[in-house]
Length: 318
Image 1 (cartoon, rainbow, N blue to C red):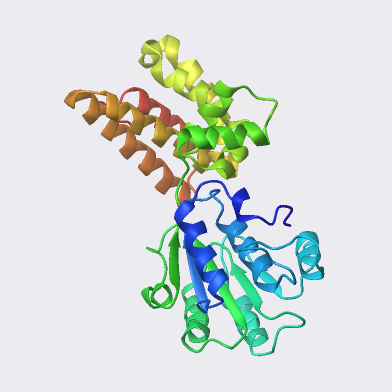
Image 2: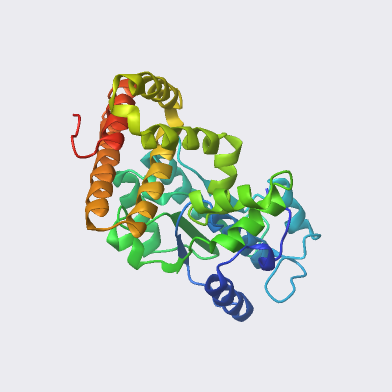
């Protein structure tokens, strides 16, 4: 679960590391944190580092030692007082939260503090969120809750107000590329930089893109979109073939749409007023495709219409 116990191993996030260093050093912890920011930038890793430091038998300034009983259990993923709650089939339901809240009424098994990490708390159902709110309003002693979320827009405002929020950000492209190069020594610096750019500075997202070979597929889509003859008869076949490949991505198709959004936004920064209007139409087509996927529309049809709209955004196909 955790191999490196030093906050120095958390890439980027200097403000987060400085604030946690001061708080952990003082011993005055809030009862709940909200770690907010994009996927893959270290929110869960920072939560685990915090859990390690709090219960470490021989911590240094603000890191766990990595060798005491508590650290060893955390390393193996078998720590009884570090609880991780993750979405199940896309959501966190009320039964899971009720079970969690009941367990918090008991003291930690063996540690000074029980640390509960709730990943993607924005995936909670409304009922689950209200159940968690009761615990946040009257937090049991010797429990620290760390919630992670991409944004606070989908959270109950009362949940946000009862947590200390720490903001996480995507890394600068150069720093992200360096991290990717360390994780993937088999790829070259140019490929690492491309992954960093496509991932918006998120090392975790970049590794996902590489593992799923989405970069190559992304390049193929862009090539088809940029082909001038695509609106003619000769261009129909590659569009249909590429649409079929997109549809085959299944659950990864929304991730591909995100990559295409970044590509379009990059084009917007380079174009004139006419070009910017074209890119806005492309963004609208991507948003429309995402809404259609959310409604479980046929992926192949959605992909075909999307590609034709990306190629010819002035004459939209619906």
